[in-house]
Image 1 (tube, rainbow, N blue to C red):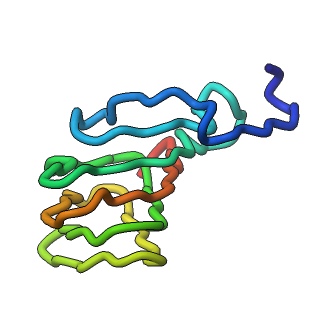
Image 2: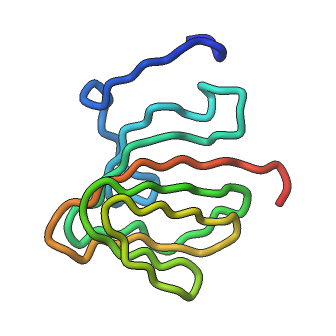
Length: 119
């Protein structure tokens, strides 16, 4: 697929991939190599009961999340945020964060990252 071509993807047709943090799954709509932009990926993600991303930092990337289903806990820096459906979260580059699902239902969300050459 060329970089300037239109892409239409159906969630049910995308393969499950293990999240980079080894907990939870994602279905990737767009990967970095699919676009000349600074978007690192755009994906649909899920965390099952008692899963978490683990604390991590992206030194050269911002992340944006929109939660569709379920309730989660997002620890960002030294603060905790209770996540419910229809919640948007922006995480600046260089900020430590951990997404966890301590509840009894799967959490689903869409998210993307935007990379910076120098932050």
